[in-house]
Length: 313
Image 1 (tube, helix red, strand yellow):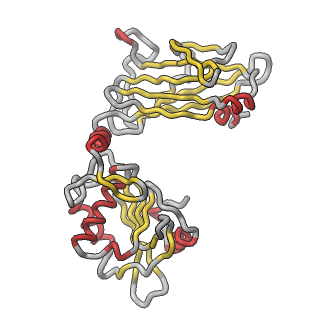
Image 2: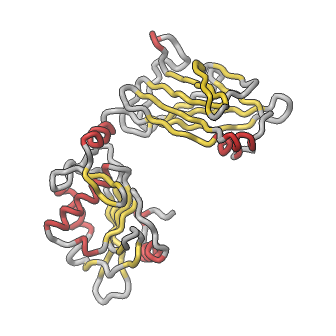
Image 3: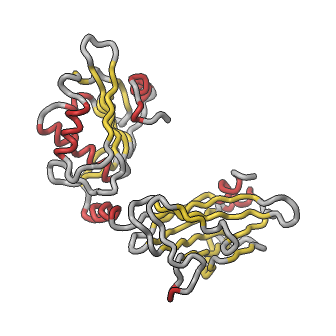
């Protein structure tokens, strides 16, 4: 999809013509929302701060929406002499505390008018400096297509973005050459997608118990039944209890660092190819993972195992 920072009139018309739905990261507002009165200014501060406090996103001023939260029409916009990028930037900067770094405001020229009219597209990043307060002294987040006040626990959780590291795990299967020893290699990469250094971290992931698997370096301590099928827990830590070496003792992850755990000879997980991917579909097999980093709340996810493997067959 085209970068919202480059949207032109044709792109906005397409959003309206296709009746695009609003989402957590996309909001439509009519140009009337850009009026110079206290209530409209308050609503601007709510909308923009809510985006930054949630997942970031795009606010389009100039597209009407219906009761189903679908875009309907591209309206006539605003007169550039009265409302423009500089005016909106000033409203955002002076009515949201603390300031949100990286907000981008893009004007879109509208044709078919005797006077110069524009729509405004506001691209709001997910902020590492959240929570941000609107000018009514409340904190908001995007929920159910609108900005709603945050609860106490939500404010605390968002505030942790700048206190704790944010790590994610990536898994990729590759297939070895054919023959009787053919197997799949599972690659594990830990990524620091936040702004805080991770000093101590660990990854847990569950996989079905494949016969004849070959592992090295990973600790497998638990076994469980999922839908009458056995799963094994694999664990990796950059430091082991008591400081004993686990290949990458004292390794730290700086922001944007990517640590490939299984790209050497000390950590690997090999799965034989003598099983049916179709059977994995029937069983609904998944790869479930969880990452721990310092005192941050754990992050996790679930991946379809047959989809991962099917991609390389």
